[in-house]
Image (cartoon, rainbow, N blue to C red; front, side, top):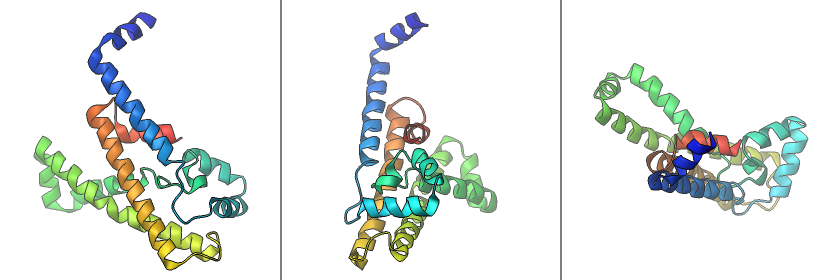
Length: 187
């Protein structure tokens, strides 16, 4: 086993892919600790702990602490996963998408491109729901403005899109399925 591992690291291409994957995962973990501008993380944490009780620790472990920090990457890959599911269902319902899927590699690339664009919609919905929900519950404090809410929605959506893009870069230039690896590293 150790011999096989040593031989694997002798391969320059494999080392480059592994290094790329590790660097992207470090960026993801950094983004998971970077709070959204204009938010008091202590208030959000206190609100979540009071609302969720012991379930808070479970939620926090699944998000890698990004939800606790209300980080830019708090949505993680959930909008992308949602859009992937939507696109799979749409290929059954829309004949043009079904034909695209049957077109082989070119069709799958087109569907993947559409999926990336569709990801923005669930990202906006999830970030708006979370931000407005926190705002109405008082978790953002009394001094927040509409500009703060819009900034949070944009930051969360952009963070989800960036996480999706980083996952795709891992898939293309690194080792394994990038979205799955990001999901794993966040847990």
